[in-house]
Image 1 (cartoon, each protein chain N blue to C red):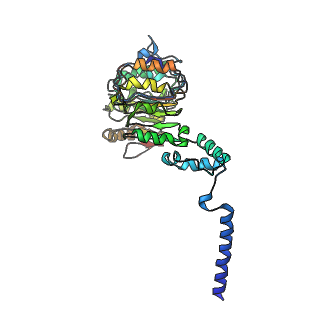
Image 2: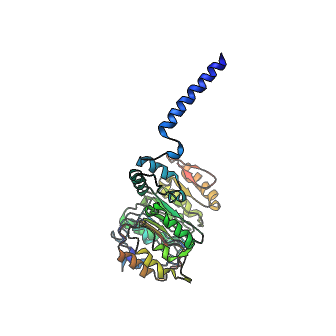
Image 3: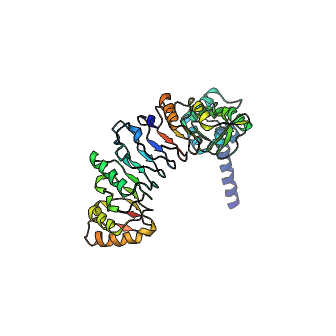
Amino acid sequence: MHRCLWMGFIFFYLMIFISDASAYGSPKDIVIHDTAFFARILSYLKYDEIVGLKRVKKSTSSQWLAVSIAASGSDLQLVLRNQYISDKKFTNILKKECFQYVKKCNLSGSFFDVKWLQQLPSLEVLALADVEIISGDYFLRFQECILGVLERFPSLKALDLSGNAIESMDAFSHFLDAQGFTRLETLILRDGGYCG
Amino acid sequence: MEHLVHFPSLKTLDLGNNNFYGLCHWWDDSSIPSESCFPHLETLILENNHLIPFLALLPALKFLSLSENQHIGDDGLRHFFELVGLRGFSSIKRLELHDVGLEDLSVINLNLLGALNYLTLGGNSFHRGGIVRFLDLYGERFAKIQEFILSDDHFSCFLFMLTQVVFERKAGNLCMLNQQGSKRK
């Protein structure tokens, strides 16, 4: 008697589970239309997963729109600290669909070619503390390249250039003033050996 | 750096660990910054330079770190409070004066720092007379500061003074002190 009741209970549970699963699809078929829900998912992900998002062939335009809106409203970060960032690595990052939504970039302590800085999207936060920058096979003097790089980011809110040699702080501050970084709220220039 | 003075949006400026000796050229010929200098600057970190602290008068400043500027000393800090007194008020909530060559604690005029709730003073060698005078002058105001950091070397001496001066006078707002040298209301 008990066994029959137990079997009946399992059968009933399975019926509910199957109907539930068919309503929502198997995990492979899960699609996200809701922007707010997707934004919440993004907030739990790290950079690697976020820029790893790719448009699949079956995705509809409405789904992709939801993804784009959520991604653009979230706080995506590109953080590659204390490492050699090869051309191959940068090329792979730039291929990712969500790269255009990155707003914060921290390359502090890393070693990379200046050409990749020219391809970063419009940023709000840029940290380039203690970096080594090359152009092809040649090391660049920091001040020589940083002004040209910063011209691309007029919307910066925070800039960290600590530990790099800026020979002329007057020229640098004049540049910031002339470029009209009207949104700049945080400027960090520690450990530069600057005199004044 | 004078071009940064009128930067309208700047709220945080960190120039720590450099070799700045003076920043008077930031505001032309005057040694006193005007209202238009760094109008929105709330955090200014100048630790480990060689500065005198006339930056007290920046209008919106809430966090000022002058730590490890050993040249400041008693005279520099006295000048600092004279300037604060000229303006009559200060918005500073957090003041870091670690290792600034301070010996006379009483040059810190807490009555001019009405908003202060965090003060670090480690790394200075205070003399006893200054501590007694400080507690005598600002004991009540001192009791209202939420965080007060001293180095371990000076903590026991300070605790002794505090016990004598503040507790014996039955100040209404007494404090609890712990062995790390921090104080909470």
